[in-house]
Amino acid sequence: MNYKKYLDLLQKELVVSLGCTEPMAIAFAAALAKKHVQGENITTVKVLASANIIKNAMAVAIPGTNSSGVNLAAALGVVAGDCSKGLEVLQGLSVQDIKKAKAMIEKKIVTVGVVETSHKLYIEVFVETPQSYAKVIVADEHTQVVFVEASGQVLFNTLAENEADEDGGYDHSFLSIDSIWNFAQSVNIEELEIIKQAIELNTSIALEGLANAYGLQVGKTMRESIQKGFLSDDLITRAMALTAAASDARMSGSTFPVMSNSGSGNQGISVTLPVVAAGEKLRISDEQLIRAVTLSNLIAIHIKSKMGRLSALCGAIASGTGASCGITYLLGGGKEEIKAAIQNMQGNATGMVCDGAKVGCALKISTCTSAAVQSAIMAIEGKVIQGTDGIIEGNAEQTIENLGRLANQGSPEMDRIILDIMVNKQVG
Image 1 (cartoon, rainbow, N blue to C red):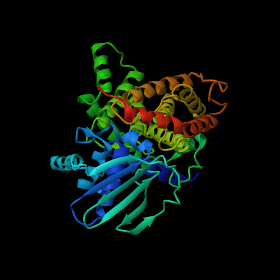
Image 2: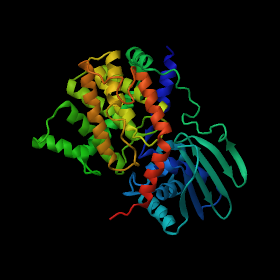
Image 3: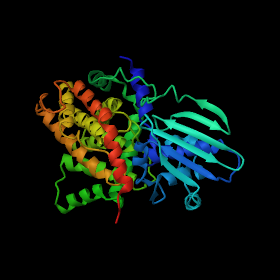
Image 4: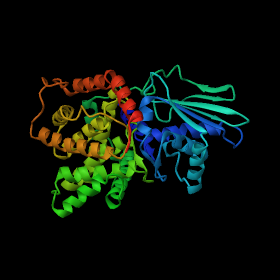
């Protein structure tokens, strides 16, 4: 086994992010474009983005602002963004920064449009001053720059080479359920600092969400319902409360960073925290927990490599499946039980759609977390959904392939309808 490939993959796909990754990617592109213009008097900021990006950046709160919007993300990137910080581009925003960004929007300096493209993840930002202009394109990954132009001079261009390549050219072919299991069991625990950091960061924002009123307060409400005796403090409820609380905080503008998975902070939360909650309930060792979270993250990465970064299917399907595998391991399951958990999850949660990033994501995450625990318990008891059912095959690898087909071939029209509903609905 090539351990380095797995360790490199974890470093690539587990990335610290402040706020939802789609508005942060917009802010990142805007900050980079601003870096390449001369003069401080910004006269134009134009954002063109794929439908999936618009869908996920419309309604989610930007950390520290109590506001949302594609235009605000771009304006903040221009005013105060530090592109060297990647998905933490808006770290340290001041009240004055926010006022400046909102003033730009009021002056109609910032415009936003949807672009037709084969890339599900595509962001193009044009920034102009009286002296110069710059255009930056990010595609396929949230901070993958494929084009930079400054005042007529092309500084960087790999756009054609990256045509609709959602993995940025990264090879995932070495991944399989068997190899992931073997790696998680045998890797030196000292080489998993990124997993330890994921546990620490995502647990911190979960505790913040439990302690304070964020969004729909899904996690906090569940925790209070346990205290009132309405819900029992069992494995499912504890896992749902902890995981949802982190999403509550993150999607409502908390300034706590999270460790993302496959380009999504919510996926990072929901692949890690159900396993953490199970570890607390079962009182397992730190090493067991780290190995279980390693397993869960890699299974989610494997599934997302088939689904693509963005689709009309909710990413919590993938992360919840990873979490189910991690919980199965903590309950004493082996490789066959892990495969059974995957089958059970895909027979349960596959139909959940993504209708954009927003505070309500905490409810979807809590639902997938509940399914993750249930699927794990059934797998441990030797109960697995049949290969004759729906998209389920006789083996878990082929089921994952079917999920990928559904996500990729079935997404475009569903995405179009969802975005049309979102941009045209009447609120109030």
